Image (cartoon, rainbow, N blue to C red; front, side, top):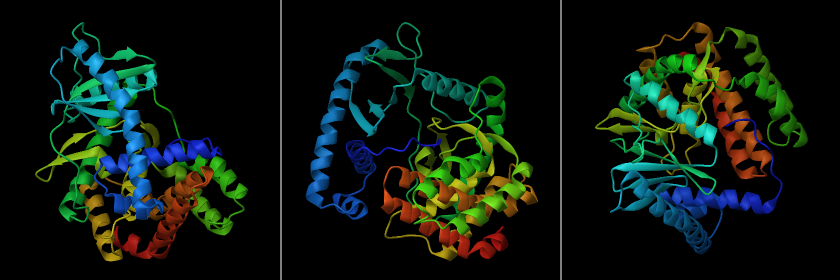
Length: 356
């Protein structure tokens, strides 16, 4: 997530919320679960899903019109994400509004494939084109990767595999940096820029200024020593596919950027704490997963002592970032959730260091 542009228009906020509800519905959340998460009745959730499904039905009609350009006539089109569709159980079609972003992602996939990284293979059109443009949208078709998303988030073996997968991707990303231009981002600059401005405008109601300053000062004291490189920036189980306990594919490079490399590890681990499920991690379970993830990562890439010591601080800064982002779109509930994760990490800093 890049520095957000705060939105104050209530209609836009509702549209974003409804899109997220529909996305969660597609991922398998029940109406009852969604109602608890968004504080809505099940009847309201059903109405939102019906409305959103109607919007996406229009996109489905467009997709059915353009699929013959790939030579696909008999087709089964099923939406799997708001911007992605499964075709005949064999292909994935992704819809973009930004041509440059799409072309960059295609290039990333090509480079990673050359590095023997399992990514989706581009399917050319009948005339040899890599994508199709239609009504201000751009459509990219690829072969569907095997595997699925992990459901047992607490499996330590899978945690090791995730750490290993992140490191494997990081190693391959070094080649992408030589061939594709990426945005250079800085977590420290974000913390001292739009994040501080957002929290100040909120009068430090959720994150206290002393808490923010402590985290930023610690980050600044080690930032120059932390290795920077191209990172995924959105590491979670939804973007890493597994088959029989082994990684089978990487997806979604929309947020790739240069930043500190431990960002990906810290983002993934804090994301586990943010899962809104009834089977949430206990402190002991999460610390065991942390150890497994780091062991998997270091089976390929060694982390410096500076990086290891910075992990709690980077995690705290990521949660402050999320709190500020949600405040910028007036989503105080999720801002509060980010703060609770921040406090959890803050309260077990020593345990984290001991686990590392």
